[in-house]
Structure formats: structure tokens, C-alpha cells
Length: 552
Image (cartoon, rainbow, N blue to C red; front, top):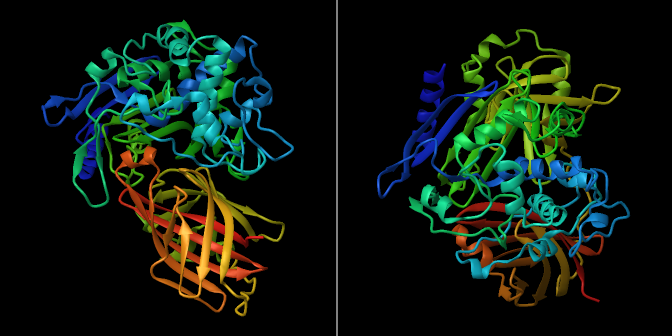
């Protein structure tokens, strides 16, 4: 079994040109396999081992959440307490009547948007954790409306850990969790001990070479709780053992009922069986419940997952982030470790006679600007998402096992109305509704000239936008508030298209992209300008909706 897991991981890492990684398999209450591969430091030929320290990015979230749950057990805070009634010194800014509760920030249902924290190469550039939260804790919708992954929410979790424990959160985590679990080489701060054992991180821009990354700090001091855990696969195995065994690893760190609360499905993606527990993503994987978390930040990627019923888990930590969204394939490795196989022949699932309901399932679905397509090919129902195709193997009339397309083993659910028409599809923690073309008419006679204003939310923050359209050109405010020309620009018949260069905010230049190539696509509708802004850089692409109004 271990040989198959190792072969699979090495082949995948070699294909991705990962300099070094470490992996461990946990069964019951024991680490049954742990090994390092490649280099912790490629330039100095230092090998990676199970005791090499990696930054595990968002795998920090279930760890810091475990710290908060210990304080919940002590009665210092309740899961359903409004965050703003508990948190001191800073608050979540919201215009909605219903405020996020502690449970919401632990389950990605707070109404906070996706946000990436800044990164600095000097601790002197960082800000207090309260200030980092103040700048980013602004809701864009009421709680419990939608699953939206939030780093800010877990920065708040860490802030609450510090406030309620009466000590900086890294110190509390060391005393309350790391010492009892004998996680002797784990910390939420970059001590000399951590630095001396830390791997060299590496990153890659689009189509560029793999390059080493200098030491950096995550946004605040103390560093952002959502992604600043430094640990080894051996240490993290102890954490996993405690979670798989009802809160016990040598000694009890959580009550059994607390662990059950963390592991149960708290917030689902639609009516599916997948979503979030407390901090953990909970999905169905090859028919089994699976708890997992991935992580990725500058120079690092990580993936931890386990089958709670079988008490089988795996940890994979890497010193490369190639800015493609790739994460180590721990899910697939876990399936192999359980005796499964990734081999699948679509012909074995193909239907000679197609179910009538498949014709109702076919079509295009969307979530924001992301579109997916369901179709029938060669007797199989197929999901096309992000340019990759996956075969859907029927498990019931509405639940399908996904093969390929970056979602091997996950479950896709069709939600139907009473007539059998698809209301939405759910896969992993994502939901997609039937795509409907915007039929609101464009006012082609409307004048575009003048000043248009509005705001938008981007993973780098909240921004005001000013768009000036004149007879001979147009300009727009960038993320720094400077007016930059749209070149070229086309403004006629109620439509505006133009391109510009936006400079990145200082805290985001370290990712390797100092500017964005921006394209605006807008049209006059209902008296305003509506459309989208596409942003491209050396490290990734994104898009945000825009709605501007004439300045009064």
C-alpha cells in the first residue's frame, strides 16, 4: 500500500517540479508511514524529511479553530454568540440586520467576501492584527446566505483566541495544544528554532522558472492566524490522531462531543452532503465521509484529509506554490491508501439507453462568472468545469460519483424542483444555477460622457472606482486611487470597452505581480453602467462585477 502511495505522489510531484515535500499516513492512533522527498533547500542540497518545517497556509484553520473550541468548552464564548458582542477593540462592519455569530466565522457562512491578506518581507511593515481585521472585516451579504471561503473570518478566530485566553494567540496555542500533543516543532510564529528547521519556499510565475522566495510575514503582528502555522508532518500527525480519536492523543485535548461538533456538517452546499463542519471541509469521497483542508500561500502548499469512520488520514506538505491553484493530491493518495484505485474506464459506466432525466440535466450552469456544462458524451453524463472534463457515474437519480476533472471521488448532486427540472448542481462546496442570459436591454442612445462612480470588492480589498468618459478618451481610478488612461477605449451605442494597467497594492507585490492588465466591459442599463472588470497578472487572473452610477 505504502509503495503505491509513494509512487503516485512522487510521479505527481515530479510532474509539477516540486523541489521537496514530506508526507505521512496515520491509521488509528499511530503514524504508520512518514517520509521526505526531494529537497527542503534545492540550492544547498538539503533533503526534505518528516521533521522538515513547512508553512501550511490554510491548514492552519482547523488548528486555530481547535484552539477556540477549547475556550468554548470553558464557557468563555458560545458558538451562537454574535461576534461583535464578544470581540473587543475591533468589530465586523455590516449594514445588515443579522450579524455573524461565532459559528458563522467557523463555517464560512459569515457574509464576509473572499480576501487575500497582504504579505511583507519585513516585520516592520506589518500591522497589528486588529488593524488587519478592521480593514477586511466588511460583510457583503447577511450570514447563512452562501458558503464563501473567508480568510478574514479565521483571523477573527485567532484574535478571539488571544482575547479570551488573555495572552497572544501564538502563546496560547503552544500551551493549550502543541505541548499536550507533543507538537514540539510547531508554532504560529517564526522563532529561531522554526527558522533553523524550515524548508526553503519556492514560487513560479506564469510559464516562468521556479525561484526561491525570501523570508516573509503574513500581514500582521502576530502573523495572520488563518495561514501562519509552521509545522512538520510528524507534528501534524499528532493533531490528526487527536481529531480521529475523539480528542485524545496521549491525553485529551478536546471533549468527544466537541470533536463531533467540529466534524459534523454544519453548512451544506445547497442540499448536498458536502460543505463545512467547524473549520474542516466535509465532503463525500468515493462514498465515504471525508474531512479535509488544503492550503496555499507564497512558496507553500499543503493538504490534509482523513476518513473519520475508518480513522485513516494523510498529510502532504510542499515547498512550492506555482500559482495555478494546484494543491498536493492528498485526496487521491488517501483513496489509494485505503485500498482504492484511481483507474476508471468510462466505458464501464456508459449507457446504451440514456435515462430521460439526463436530457433535463444537460445544459450550462453558472456561479458568478464561473460557468460549467453538463452534457452527454459516448453514453456518459459529463461535467466540464474550468476546461477539464469529468465523467459522472450514477449512484442514485440525483447523486453522481465524479471521475477526473480535478474532482476525483467527490460527489455531485442535482437539486430538482417538483417537475424534475434542475434548480442547481452542487459539487465539493460549490453550487451552480442554470445559466440565464441577461436580457435587460442596453440603452444604446444613452450618453456615456461624464463621471461615473461606484465600488467593487476584490480579493485584495474594497475599492472605490471613478470612471471619467470624455469625447476623446476615458480614464479610470486604479487600486491606489490614481487615475489611469483606458487605452484603447471604445465608447459607443451605450457600450464601453477599454483596457488599463493597475498598479498592485504594496502588500501584494511580493507575490510576484506588481501590476494588473485590466479590461472593462460595461453597458448602460437602467440608468447605470453595468458589467465586469477582468484582471490579469503574472500570478493569476480574476474578475469582479461592476455597477457604476453617474456622479450626482
